[in-house]
Length: 277
Image (cartoon, rainbow, N blue to C red; front, top):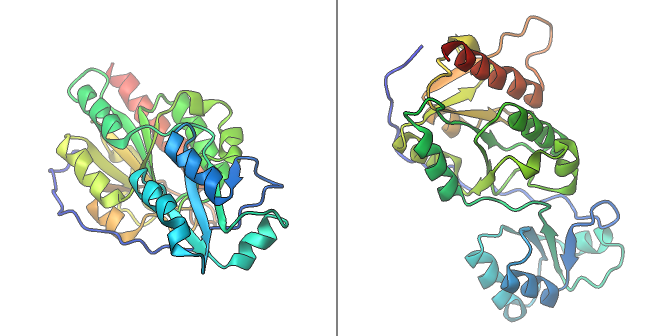
């Protein structure tokens, strides 16, 4: 199946921001807290800050530089009730600021897109992943491990409403983070448009799709989009895909675990490409 190119206008998905889960230092070591330590980490740029959580009601003038640096470095900032930070940090003197540190360095999204574009038209067309709101760190880690085994060229994840490269993800990925480029983007719909501009087809996995996953021509330059564990792809993401495919489910459950689905789809892509060569 090789559909005609369908260009969709760039539509914003909106933030729809939801409060993050409390950061618990007893369970996660990759955190720093306090205004000055977080500001210094942002200034130095030596650490990759995943996100910053700020207690509501803090003094704006005290946080001015921190917020400016976070905006410059494109670090998501969440606000939660102060009591939430007090409880999660076990009485630590956090000064209303907690930053979570990624365990691996993110790749620049534009640079990764350019790398994919260089492979279009070659004997090894790009194969990439776009993940729409994966929240379970074990699922993300398993997907990244599968992506590395299937020689995926890169993975894109959203900055908000999704898990990042945490300790738990690294553990589940079992070393894959050392080999698979992962980039964060602010808007998945805009990313889809950027992929299409580079002649990379965008295929979404959906239980409601009419076409089976074996019907897509995976020898084309392709980025596969997988949705969140409960909701699947967001509507605007699904609408902007070139095609939607499904994995037939024969039992009583409606769908496979997202990490299992990733394995099925990526290895079908590899099967088709091996047959072609």
